[in-house]
Length: 299
Image: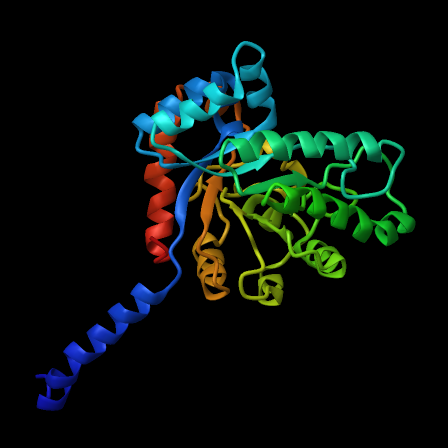
């Protein structure tokens, strides 16, 4: 039998718990256009909108394909007419964050991407740490200047530039290296981002999340890692959140504790997703991903 004291305090405890849950940073589900790459710019967004998706991440490749026959104004109209919010965009430029002979051309392309995507209403743009050559210690020494240059261009367009570490990058493959380089560059318009797949399937470890400063992570990619030898993992082995073995609930709770309240963007490369019906793919992702988010109490 409950004591009188317990009975009186129970509503207070419940109220306190509710206030704590309400105070926790909330996150929102997002889909990355790579997930429905075969459908193209317009059809991917149309299918996702029918499935109830509200936030989207645009890619340079699908935008380029769309612009072969249409305009930036039309590209923006597709997004606004569907009631979607573009939260981030991808500009893939090999060796962008390190010195090299193609630096001038890369910066021009980066400026072009910032111009294009900012006109679509984007405030965040990322470039993955893709490398096309052997990286040397000198590259790390020159990286800070490259990061600052990227940040200066982004600043001109009132955008935040983000570095995505990749599990197989010969330059930035871990969260710790990403944090080290962005902190050394110390540019206000450059932040690290976190891809859950690259984080858990690569050389990073859960405790690395403790190194994050409040508000430091600007964007998150949200995927799961299958239960298989890490040596066999690649981009195509990404899974929908909840379909793998990553401690996603713990990761989300840790990010919430660090003040992250942005989008969780699902980026998948498997053929069944990329060539599937965008509506059905989005419906499946939403059902499973939001279940994980509810368990983590971030929605």
